[in-house]
Amino acid sequence: MNSIWSNLYDQCKDRRYAVIFLVAFLVFLGLAIPAVILYLRAPEFNVSFTYFLPGMGVIGAAGVWRAVRWLRAPRGNPPKFSPLSRDECRKARSKLLKDQNFRKS
Image 1 (cartoon, rainbow, N blue to C red):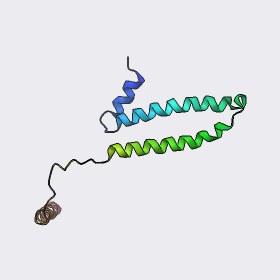
Image 2 (tube, one colour):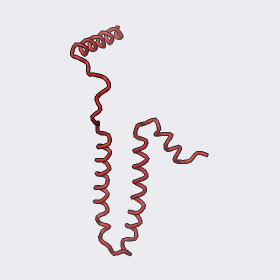
Image 3 (cartoon, rainbow, N blue to C red):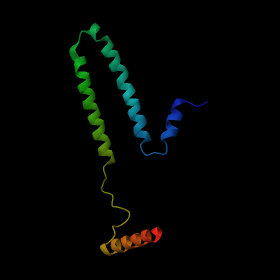
Image 4 (tube, helix red, strand yellow):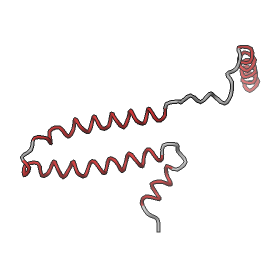
């Protein structure tokens, strides 16, 4: 029997952002359900903090965005391959252009 979670993950597992997507989805559900309950029961509570919920959501989304950007930022790891010199770039470009002209003929 296929569960919804395995089907959801099967569609995303070949992509690099599958974990981020699943975490964001679960966080969204975890925050949306209490927010809806608070919004629906706000007249009973007679509390004005429900007006701050959208602002808190924006601040929370900005914090998540910043954390994701911080985690994806390159660290002090040097690149695996050294950059090409000018001469190597010129030769590679010439070879690509020559190959491209050959295909047109």
